[in-house]
Length: 463
Ligand code: UDP
Image 1: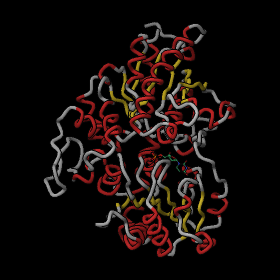
Image 2: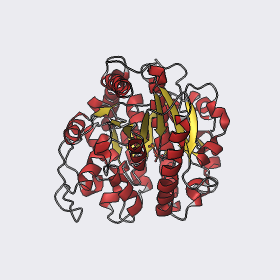
Image 3: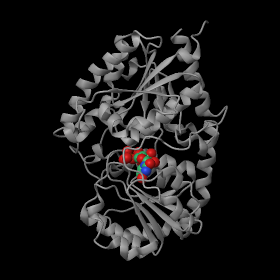
Image 4: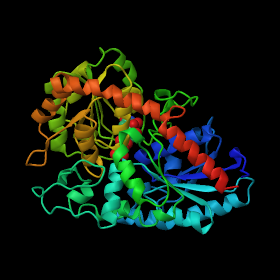
């Protein structure tokens, strides 16, 4: 069959506008570019203005923008989450349509819209123009499948945490607290819950489903979910920089697009520490801990006696106890935002104290770093369960009756990973996932083959 020339196949990539969605989709765009396609990455106008034009320099990827209806202030311009999501859909569909029309009159019309599954309206735009539509799921396949089951009403949810655990094909038995928080804290964040369920509202019309995971990591649930989906489900991850995987993509050393101001002192500080001696602490781009929880975390970290690198975003810094940084001296480095993959890959890091966001989790798995997981909300609770009980590379903290994780619990969990027998087992286990992730992405690996299959089918469909 005649195929369109590779570099003339134009893929418009539309991430949900947050760091944890931009990173994997930008990384995947780099992969597509390395396979000869022409990606254009479209963030919101607000994010693009925040980032500045230097991002465009020296990249094979074109950048463009759509609107989220909050061009001046992004999410903070909206009244609340519901208002933001309503504006995002209305302005997003309209501006995406305009963008597709604009490219129609150029030598490079859009052939395919690769959209974040959180934005199902982007598929409607693709189909309106007869384009290929590919859904990109940025969360674990386990979490996607749970939402699929919830969307289709096939999940019989326990009413209380003491009820029998939940059986889902391809997953271990799940207690209520292992479910994504939108499910186990019934009624919390209804707009977000509706959004994650709506991923499945039209996905049967998509041409492909791509998931940022790798086959051997989630084999059973990938098989279960593949059986019920109409479009082919392809595992294409992990999407961490190529330098940590197959080293095939030149200059792919970092995520490139940071929504927060980078602190560059961490590598220098880490280099002064002995191998495996440092606890790296981060809760990603969105989590807001209470002042009491920050106090317990600070005191728990201090009690361990270990050195630690703690990412505290500027919006959270006032919650760190007064004088804490001075009290810790060289034992601690508190940074606004760092290159997380570079830190996780550093030999000084012995443990990752994380909120269990999917990117952080898969980065730690791929870089062989055992974890303490302190999930906050959304998919993090399910990720924590898998890290502890399926992949066996970490422990999950226990939350006290007051809703706070105590300093003693924090200290105890870090000690388990850093020095206990259980920690030894995790450290022995961690390299296995690292090797398997590299295998998946290297030539002939499961993700590499899936990406090749995706590229060749797009070429055929767009001929
Ligand atoms: N990250 C980073 N520097 C930091 C903290 C986080 O580059 O100081 C990156 C991290 O590597 C990951 C992303 O931000 O790729 C956070 O995504 P995740 O899914 O873990 O959590 P979210 O921010 O969505 O809650």
